[in-house]
Structure formats: structure tokens, C-alpha cells
Amino acid sequence: MSKATRMTKQKKVILEILRNADCHPSADWVYEQARKIIPDISLGTVYRNLNVLRDSGHILELNYGSTYSRYDGNPENHYHFYCEKCHQLFNVKIPVYEGLDKMVKETTGFDVRNHRTEFYGICNECKARLSSSSLM
Image (cartoon, rainbow, N blue to C red; front, side, top):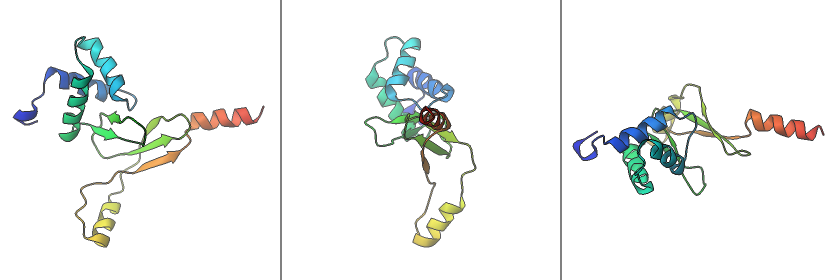
């Protein structure tokens, strides 16, 4: 991080929370976790630091058309699956298809830095619930 965006205690705590989360939490969830470590941290401080961490490439901000964003402590390009039933967000552990960047560049002439792909559908847990309820 540059001097203008030095790693403060608040940023360290927020980054650590996101890197250790097994979900893609909202800012409110991050705030609740951060308050356990820094009781006097404000929600505004959490939002500002999330934006700084996003802008500096330390985290990803994910927006799926809801009224709030979710955050990912893994800034490496990877795919996500969004369950349309339970609204959970999952990491998809498959290699990122770099050929897609090349294809777009060859087709458009654009300089592609990366791409983001999301998959939408129903997760296994929701599928199981749906199939068990249809058996009744």
C-alpha cells in the first residue's frame, strides 16, 4: 500500500476478517466482527476501509443486484456461483479461462486486464430441499 493508504489497525483487522471468512459477507457482518476486536470502530470506518482495500486490490467487492455488496478476501480472479434460492455465494474452484481475455482482445481490440464470471442457479442444498419437499 502507498503512504496515502497505509495499513492501519482498522484495515488490518478488516482484511484479516475477510481473509478468514468462509463466506462472502456484507459490510454489516464485517462491522459486527470488527467490533469484537475494536469495540469503538464505526460502521462508516468499516465502509471507508472496505473501499480503500477494494481500490488497492486487496479484496473484491461483489454486487449481485441486491441493496448491499458482498466482499471477498481473495482478490485473485476466480469464479462465483450465486444460488437464486438461498442467495448464498460460493467460490467455484475451477481454473480461470484466460482464453476468454484473448478472444475479447482479438475480437474488439480492447486491452483486457481480467474478467469476472458468475454462475446463477440452485445450490445442492436447495436442490435437495426442493426434491424432498416434492416427494411429500
